[in-house]
Length: 226
Image (tube, rainbow, N blue to C red; front, side, top):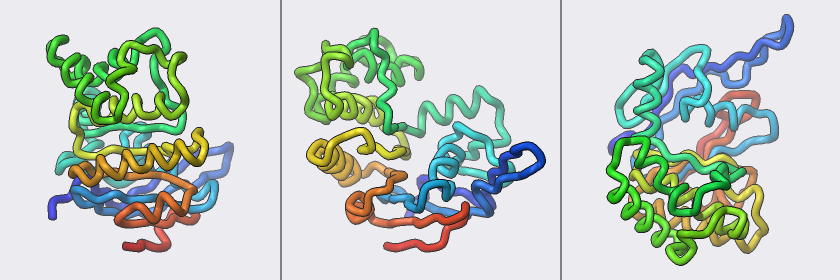
């Protein structure tokens, strides 16, 4: 089976005065194309740090990450930016939508950055909004949308360019239980269509929806459950 995301010998150290914090310690991980993987563990165990390194937001202290068989580190900043823009989608606890833009304008941003013609970008953005059930809210600004609708716009933005892997950091963390279930049902549909998802979460119900659960403690993988 093809590998969507892989890391080997991954370390991330932080210096705090004279102390070195080992946030991620020698992690090796392979995620196959089409998997939906939960990363879990107690607060401060290194979940978000690991996700930040896997996504290229932070550089590792040692080790390598490969996305779609391409190295994420040891390349130029421009090459990394282009690789992340093409192969990765991002969904966060905070929606990070641009308030001055409408929903469809927010969704088409990744395509415009990749050089798509504006007409094609708009068409694909509308298709993505339709996929998440928000085509009728395309011209609404984030302030005119509920929290669940804003998160669905951010999901549309994450999938619009058909990335190899979608990385999610507590995607339901700011939502009530009913809206959380709706968002997870949507993520499940996206996974069933063939997309690869990696989800950092505290929620055991979300983990039960995934094909694999990886548990961290003190920056180390302590268990993998299919």
